[in-house]
Amino acid sequence: MEENNLDKKWFNYFSNMRKKYNLRVSANKPIILFLDAKDSTKLHRELLKNKENDFFDAIGKTAKYFTEKYNCLGLYGTDEISFIIENTSQFIDSINNEKSYRTHDIVSIFSQYFFEKFNDIYEGEVVYWHCKCFNIAKEKVNSYFKFKSKGILKGITSIFLKKHGVKNAAGIKLEEKIELCNSYEGYEKIKDYENGILYFDGKIIDVREYLNGNIVYLENNEKPSEETTQNFSLKAFDDML
Image (cartoon, rainbow, N blue to C red):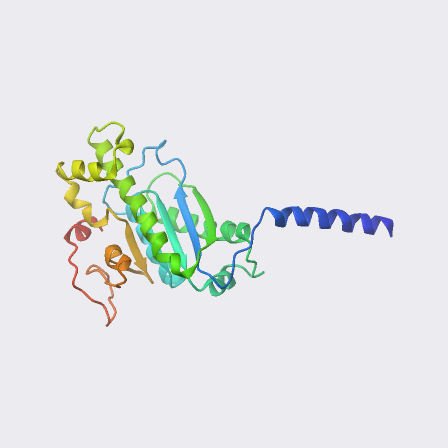
């Protein structure tokens, strides 16, 4: 009897410690799944090159797959991607038989799905990913997109300038970086995705329009819906994909 009580004592202790560092997310708020690639700078990955199954193309196809699978939004640029899932409980039920709302469980399962899908597409070295998840208030979804979109713009302009031999590009003010980027030939080819690329339910939508409260599907979607508004030409995108 004493041994059973001791086992129970230690079980409760370690179980509580595990829960202490494994926070819960709410089923009633949108969940963010944020992933960024490990060692992109160190490995000198080509994050802007536009060819079939390179890094940029692979992350786009992966975004398309998961946004359609989970009927959610996905914003990506450079070497990072955010999925915004509003039906949190349905998503968690679909990936976790135990219906655990704890962050470690969600991250460990989803990151494996993402890792497998991306690396099946990418024609390069195996890419490993950092993954984080957390709730945000529904009214803060647009604020999150604005925040991440601006970060992507900073990253893309820095990468572009570094490719053209500009030192300490990350330390230049954003307005100056954009002006400097426009002075180089070739920047016009990436201007249409300088704020990131946004997928919704497997289709690309205009990120700038979305931030203004509009859903505008872009012309290069394979199967636009009947409600698609095709009033945004994206010639550079056609060359990219």
